[in-house]
Length: 172
Image 1 (cartoon, rainbow, N blue to C red):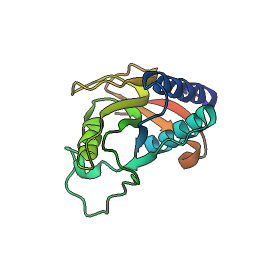
Image 2 (image 1 turned 90 degrees about the vertical axis):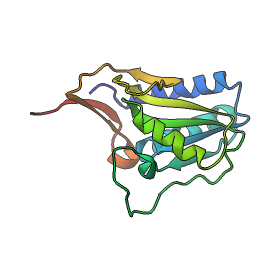
Image 3 (image 1 turned 120 degrees about the vertical axis):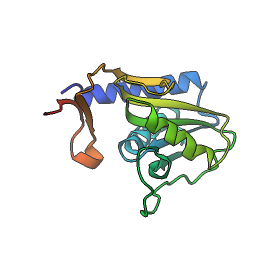
Image 4 (image 1 turned 180 degrees about the vertical axis):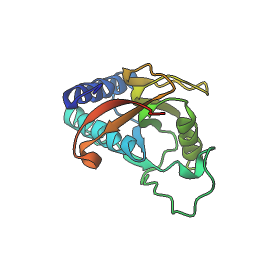
């Protein structure tokens, strides 16, 4: 185990404070989590902002499946739930793990089809390196250099009945 529940909570708290500091509060800020664990993290960050600032920050969930460059077109309905206008907003994309940057690129493409944000920032619970695109998170819970044969798995109580970040070696 790389992070237990309390380490995850501390990382989420740190990311929340960094978002508030960089954006000088909550005015014009919204959170958009990438399905599925990024969406859960975005909700947790939103709840933390609510408890600290007593302000509700718009929070949505983004399905990037139609924008991925490594998947065939899918007939499944898109699950995106962004019930607010992102035009002129400072959008913080939230994801559980960033690796190559391709998921983030797809998220940016998906956002741009919905409007023109003032800026887009990126928060990731875990950054494992291995970038293939020039994309870097603005907020990171933990930098975790990994080999190409390793997999990082984030577990969230809302989806997995437990919190934790785990590192697995691929069996070959």
